[in-house]
Image (cartoon, rainbow, N blue to C red; front, side):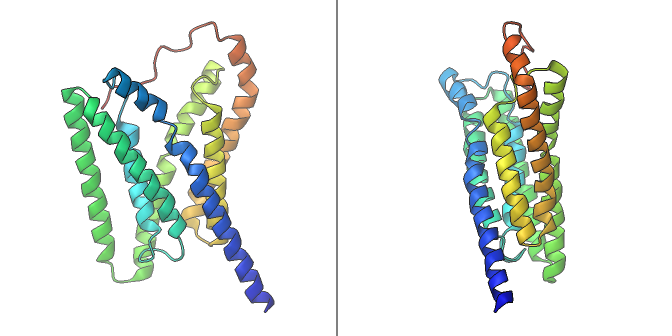
Length: 239
């Protein structure tokens, strides 16, 4: 009876962490809204890049697939949060394509089709693997690698803040949401004994702590130096 009670408590903690993670994720999913309001208002993508949204879409699709019952056990909250993320990214990509100039437009369409093809290959290929454990490990490693590679962006921002001694390009709410989301799914993965969830989110939680520390440390100097221009633009022109 004590053992069953402990299991029920563990599952309750896991579900609570997963639900909290789904809630905190909306802070990240909604963060590009000001950028796209500007794009819609000006009817131009200007110098903004569409690549982050394409890559985020692929990451969300792979991780959402990993959370399904035919791939891993009791990870449905991983699927819900990443399915929501994929919907947001599809909307952002569609808006970007609508207002992009012709060259960018077709490049983005090509990248979007590539994402669909890559995901279809992963999904169909994994279903052809008869052994559940092999299927789980294969998609798990792909999901974990995809999540870890997403941390290139926080690392770039951290490096930028340290070099410029300014938090202008690291909004507090984004750093906070990154920390809360990663910590929630770190706990979710631990409670579910799933290294493919807790390892990448553990890295994300550490990076979130670093961002919050840097924000606290450099925000005063950012205010003091706010009259001086920092860098003209960090927008990318690749897509």
